[in-house]
Length: 473
Image (cartoon, rainbow, N blue to C red; front, side, top):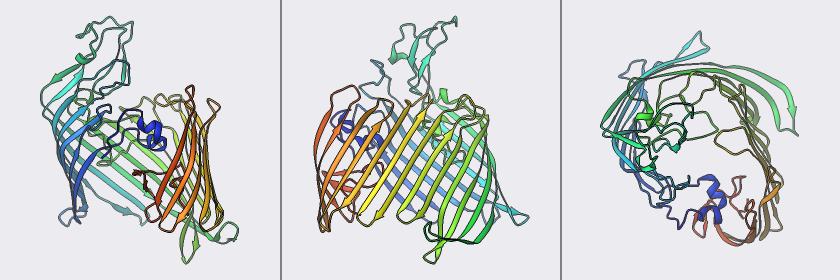
């Protein structure tokens, strides 16, 4: 449960939590696990009326795990769910005085898929799949197209709609009343067919002569796994813009899942034909009598023959690198670079080093440029920890924004080990980029056996290095 006093509370007092999840959820779930299925009953409510919420009052989902289909070589998986849904919009709209009308519907959704995993020639893994989905909505609606030159927000998708001023058209809503931009319709049924093919293989070569104590290498094995995943979907019913959007596609810098049921945006499913291709590289060594992933590198991109969520013919080129040369040092790089003009650039880097038992440093950089939904940003953060003795330690965290050339956030802690707890006292300084600087005094109690929980009662991932503030390694 997250009951918050006002829309600015998290940003003002828990900035890290706000960056991770600016609209925390309030929900209650009951789950029954079985070898063959999972049954989940979920409830969700709009506790804070200044936050947009998709209410589920309730939702029941029966998830069938991947399993043999009546003893045949075929594999079956699927899910069936029924939900009473209501999309409750904020009473303090983000876009001026625009108010979206709430809408609700009962949704019954059932999905069934069969696949035939096999291996050809002893080295080529092939997995064709095909499925069918049916979704019923007790109520639906669509956006009323405004007149030429008007600018409004679609209450279904929440996106800004700007009509071409050169178009000669009128609107069913000539006064541009935000609460009247939604045209309600009756019940609808949407059938969908999906099909796809996954192909992959694996090559490896060992280099036993590679030995390096400094780099933690006791032999080296290079594993290369090229893969191709084609996904096709045929929406044989109403388009997403004619369906109330509850589980919908939201702006993200990451690629959407191509497979079902991993594709979560049930109400936004359109017709598509997409191929995801790439190759995964792993460099393995021996360590402590076991196989150790010394370096992993995954490179991939999408070819969009038809993609309702982007106009780009191909996606960015993605690279995800994880480098663990030594137990006390790691490097992570997640990057995507544009291949066509519709693309954008994003590079996120994290370096963590623990050179001694008593010291630890973490340096991270986040960069994004040219994305339509996210502001250009170049930000570096630094975390340092120093244990003075068995009882005392100090730590600091700083965040610098290059675009505005501002030291955006500073936090300093003195920590005292109390056997079962760690008491931390410190201060923080935050620059609000044009607003007044804010100063804070912090007192935190952290339970050593469960460092993700602290007093005042909160669940916190701490600074960007993933460590709770004031925690002792």
